[in-house]
Amino acid sequence: MAAVHQLSRADARRIAVRAQLLTAERPTDLVEVVRQLSLLQLEPTRAIAPSAELVLWSRLGPGFDRRELWDAVDELRLIELHQALRAPDDIAQFRAEMAVWPGAGKLRDWQEDARDWVVANNDCRRDILERLRADGPLPSSELPDTCVVPWRSSGWNDNRNLRMMLDRLVERGEVAAAGGSGRDRLWDLASRIYPDDPVPPLEAARRLRDERRLRSLGIARAKSARLPFEAVDVGPAGEPAVIEGVRGEWRVDPAQLDRPFAGRAALLSPFDRLLADRKRMGEVFEFDYVLEMYKPVAKRRWGYYALPILYGDRLVGKLDAAADREDGVLRVAAVHEDTPFTGAMTAAVDGEIRDLAAWLGLELEMP
Image (cartoon, rainbow, N blue to C red; front, side):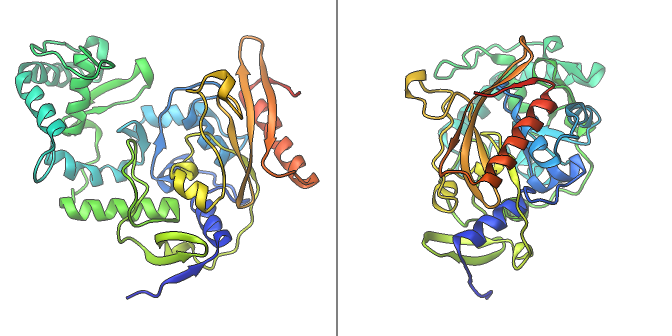
């Protein structure tokens, strides 16, 4: 049995920041960055820039050309799956679950409902596959909706039959995103998109995903609450750890232990993977943050789409800014300092803000 590693909060933060490629030594290869992060969440809000682009800019720096990201998607050097971009060699870890869709063991009600809905609309499923087989890749606008039983939900997705069928066919491993994004996304048969890598058995695939997630996060809980997008716990992966002053059973990537640390300033997307575990963010980084775009204006403390500010191994504030593309301006409303910035911190953060404006091709307007 591995010894339990005794870590301070600073130790844990530095492990997390290193694993997320946010140290002074910037990476240079876009696909390798996504591979290390394990995923790049696709979130369409453009208050400053799409989150996927912001996440890469935070790592790669001012030289990052956003067209390189979407070229990588179109060339299938990155593959979209479950609202995220992933390295192609990670896809096999998900195909084991696709093979047993809608799930292994006793099914939940929603899994049975999804299965029954696809069975009821099997002719539509076959029509889509036949069309893609003959003419794919195609946008959804060129795919048939021949469903005879409409999709029912709490209201948001009512009657969005084609969209929901495509989602189910992705879950079944029959259809895959084939490049493009948003309304221009293309679809094709998964057999043409996914690498022909060996698919591990289901339990082995889950262990590999836990290990992959831990390499990305650096340090994580063995168990945590289920999240709607992507898990932040890692099961028995890695080695056990205790963080001084923080409760819980932690697992650490041993490759991140006893390594030097040189930090820097960084502006982070609200959907950055460093922040994905909000409980870890509060307890280990001691950072108070909520994305306020869904709050009424009067109840916002930091702004509609405030960017968390990293300095070294600490999250130290929030940048309230918005890109006004019509006027060609990155308009900064405020830099919220959780604790008063030193001169060095102010200079480093101001430099990042200037770099952000230049990367966006906008003039900078500061208060």
